Amino acid sequence: MKKAVVLLSGGLDSATVMAMALAEGFEVYAVSFRYGQRHAVELDCAIEQAKAGAKQHKIVEIDLGSFGGSALTADIDVPKHDNIDELTDDIPVTYVPARNTVFLSYALAWAEVLEAFDIFIGVNALDYSGYPDCRPEFIAAYEKMANLATVAGVQGRKLTIHAPLISLTKAEIIQRGLALGVDYAKTTSCYDPAPDGRACGRCDSCLLRLKGFSEIGQSDPRGYA
Image 1: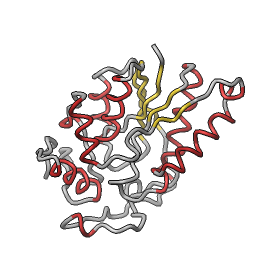
Image 2: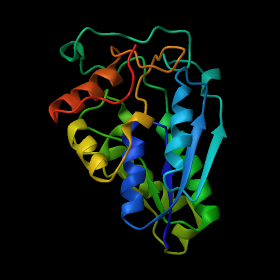
Image 3: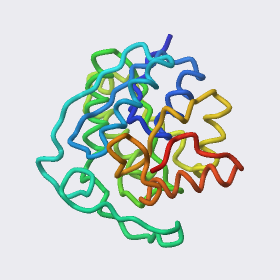
């Protein structure tokens, strides 16, 4: 079987991407990160999701929180809204500087060791919060760099960064996942969950998730405070 490294956060998008990689016949090596995020409950979800078919699952410890600069890693309030119409095009304070660049670099290192030539990431450029490292231009540039910076690339064995959700709406992502049997009760998207893990229902990520389920006439199986 072809090997693939899948970035598995514990969220809705990454769970869907892992299911897609499995459906394409890849042997999945999942990697998650404890990076100082306030919503570390997502790692409990990632552990459960990995049981659905990952060959191996690693949780890597890094400390992006030591730099701060984000409401997810520093003592900064997570913005809350009464409805999704209040979201703007501005890059929100929940953006973690260089997060996907760092995560992909770890995935790339493991892929080299595994002799895997495929990395899957659940970035999305439609129903998302405006993060610069979720755009197609970023993925294309990172893939080009990866093929310059690795032994496999130098030897002509192309590495591919797969971002199969990048042009889908949240509703379309959920539909894909449901068709593949993803259990969304075992995912979390909330940036500021309650101590018991229930989602706040008012942060950007919760609102986008709830919008997606609403558009397909489904109820979100994840608990909300």
